Length: 487
Image 1 (cartoon, rainbow, N blue to C red):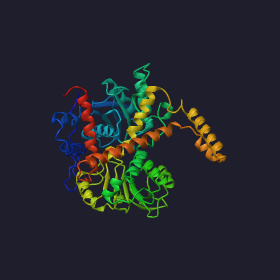
Image 2: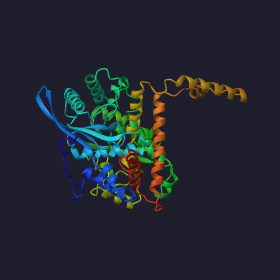
Image 3: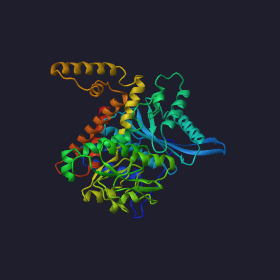
Image 4: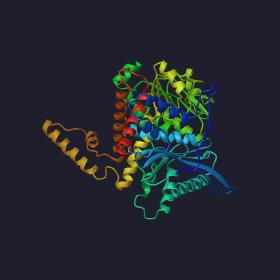
């Protein structure tokens, strides 16, 4: 089914460390597979490899004349269907990166028990330098190419936003797919991360950032983790730094600060960093960034034009939420954090991770920490197939039940609660309440399973990534066995 061989680019750091994301993911997989000697090596190889890669070029007419763009869609695993994974718009993306990201999707879906196989897509384009008209034309033609080869569809392969794409692009994809499949009842389930008005779900935009918050909160309240890494309980009063102030990083920063009680002391972006040991005003900083697209001139913190300056900011928690290979052997010595929560895919190289583990730094891996996006995408996909907003049937019923229970308590105690309390207790769940509840439970359950696997061999391993991969491999392995292909 693959039409072209994917790119085999091989990036290295200044110190010679392999930075090819596909190589790094395969290496992490191999380490976990070695811990499972009872598993059939043939099935393990089937889990590791990318099943299909569609690499193609397509023309787009622009006001400056026709241009050629390069696109990819990788299908890593068909053990569960449909396949799921975002679409990345970036000027330096290649086939190896797309395959690696597709593999990570397979593993993270397994970890959080989302019934999808892993996929990923990309177009080599810099959305910061292109007009809206060009981006729309590219998106619609890319969708046409995927549909033509059956690489998109509600029961086949369901894209979502990734770096460089968002609700706008997902709406264009749905419109294009719907035009190509007139009358399709479930057409709007062909993608997730859509605007709410186009079949999206409330809470999806914040989902990855909120998932990071829930994962951090669970880890910092887990007795085994606290003892293993010598950490103090809870998020309150801890300081943190975020790298990447896009959708993931900005939501993570806001939720960790406002709901977790931690203090944001630094933020890094591609064109500079800002820090303030006394704390950054997240709302003011976000408003400044949206207006100027730089932290320069922000009155509430010290600005540096060095995009790597965030690495040296003293903090308890570092959240790299931008791109892969940000923390390498070349700069890992600058890290002062006690916890690293990976919001991006592959932000810490294996060499850097080994050095951090020697210092007993807790690393919460990408295939767990940024799974909030695909978890809520699953909720959106299910909503599209049911054609029913979550909570619509139960909201009024549950509100009435709470009011009746409250009235019974007041009668028994002969006391009345305040009107504000009555209103709060008698409120039925909105869709976003149910989404957040489902995401919270998913992240909490997943971390407990990871820790159980991580500590299961009695060696009290500090390698949480190894535990994550082992959990993922076990679940995908069981799926392949259930298909009846292997005994």
